Image 1 (tube, one colour):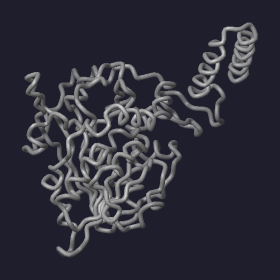
Image 2 (cartoon, rainbow, N blue to C red; image 1 turned 180 degrees about the vertical axis):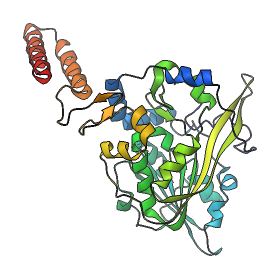
Image 3 (tube, rainbow, N blue to C red; image 1 turned 90 degrees about the vertical axis):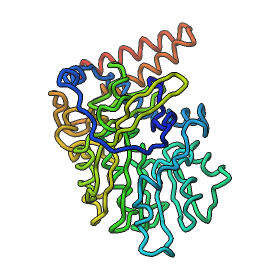
Image 4 (cartoon, rainbow, N blue to C red; image 1 turned 180 degrees about the horizontal axis):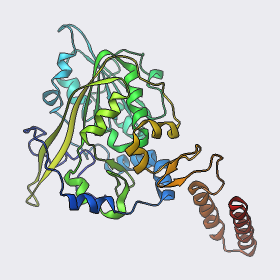
Length: 373
């Protein structure tokens, strides 16, 4: 990985996540200008990262199993709203842990809270298997399932408007910004009116953000690690607008400063997180959709300007270039597929295979010429 810290950056936190909340210092104007001029990762590589997102997280859990993250025993202290959700002490709390990983958040809660039922879902099937194989996992108190929050309807596994609280802890940052609105609206469908979403994730200008090299930048505040997993760094305004569009009212939205200490190496670095609370006041403002073109348009002008488009099936300007109304044959995806086909054929290094490559190349060049006309 390009960072020495874990994706949720709590492997080396000695104070167990408890500290004083402060507003972080903003970077200088010169640093912001330098960041804005950093070149972006090529579009075809970004397409590949998006297509292989689940694979990369599955490989992450294959390498690290259940030993990478510390259990989050601080969750109950940091989010007192988990207890406040109950109308009475006898009421059973129903919680959704979206992006549960291997259960570092849910199992401490199950130990501390006797009257609680937890739905737990994750993008990685391997992570879900680790949860189900944990000795503390009990079907009477927990249900774990694999789910892509941007594509799979949560209502297939959870009754609509049945959850008291949803936790999004270091989850949205791993999702492409153009898809975040889908995930937020998805969790909103299973949340009760008056239910709460508890959010914690990377804050803008966090130490981890400054450590990324220029070659790792995917978009504004969005970076890729060496293992293919990605990370977004949130501003307060961006997050508030994201949840507001889903019909969720912002109750708290503050930067939190923590110090990550590595005693072995004698390092102490400042970390910046964003901790927020949102209340459901009504149904989602729009139905769930997987059309990324529509999502990009509804996420605000700054996102439409700065983020690479995954699918250009609609006519809109991106980086000053107007996309065709009709789907183009010469796309980053097709170029990448052509490259893989050619590489596979050439591995055999026979005369017929070389001839096939020449034929494919001629067809591809003709397609480019016809498209330009």
